[in-house]
Image 1: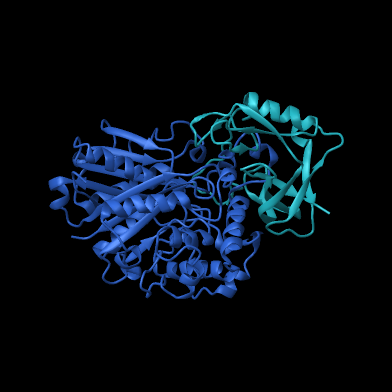
Image 2 (image 1 turned 90 degrees about the vertical axis):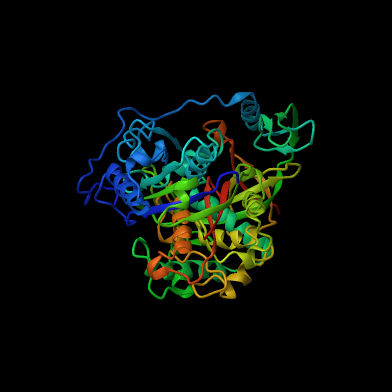
Length: 380
Length: 153
């Protein structure tokens, strides 16, 4: 990239089922803390990009009234109505333009406020699928899971192993909403069936929370307290879910390839030390292993069985617990970026993995991961 | 916690109007719906690449152009993937247990390149199952004309 851009500050609120705070206060907490961690003040911010959604907030122009808590008053400000990882992309572009040196990026939502599954239904084709009343986020993901399992011979136990790993990891993340000490495959397999093969512990939990990161370019980044440098980014959009094969994540693979080319990564399975993946449903993490080139096509099940992605494995995935541990919609992918940065700077606390020099973060938007974005971060 | 109980500083609000939308379905969906009333499965076809869209789409995303041709497809197709749904989304936007589990499948009609998400009336399902449309004798509206699919004998 022409200009080097780094994540120099980050903060997440605790993820809760029912936060005793307004969205404005959640955003204020995350934004102030992120700015403080960057060692900057509001005067230093050039541009503010938020990720929020009119459906989730129950109002139009959902960034309205987030101007004050995000520090955007009388500043260059905009929003994306997608995952926060795309807000970070927008902010990155603003910094690469050369017009700004510091960007504040925030994602936030409160599932306790909105009807949890209504926004997903609203993303369906209105003239047919929404009228039929069959598809929703869970049944659509179940169709994706079955398609993947059928093509590649993946077992339900291998999918459950993702949930057991991530919910177990979450025990070491004090901000996680759902943490299960010593979670086992048997425990996951015993959880309530929602839409086969998806069980309750394999599906994201309704979550309240916010995440903020501070991006900086040029001298500000070089002089910062800490820096996780953005080495590459890639993002692609796939077809509507009934018009594409559901047994693979084509747009994620393309996004990863683009990102790796920019970051100069030729062998991701060796060169990437750690990944934070947006697995809204457990099987998506296995599909992502393949799309990200961590293992060969169809080998996602064997890869989890090998233990490679455990906290003590060769390529730990979701030491934070991932999205299965907390899914504040619009903040989830941004939180992956914050977590990956924390691993690079050595500030991940109890879930810190040793020696992380190169980390990957993934965000997604849309039913069955229709759009995917991949970042590679590096240390000094 | 959706009932409002336990929310310490949140007031339960509703919008002061019924959020009902009247979409224009466009010529393509209108023809599709008209076809269903006559028990015909009509799909749109891209003249350039030959891709057949069902439900019909007005635009071929690959060729970046309008789909101008129509083809009538047989009532038969193949299950590409399926789920046994134990829950659905209730009117309040939350998951609720279904009275009976139901099979939802992506069915690719013979001759189509895309899938339709449909209900399959069967005890069991599997990927590759051959299915056939079941028509409603007296549909309430066009959306009910095609009620479900059943396994081919």
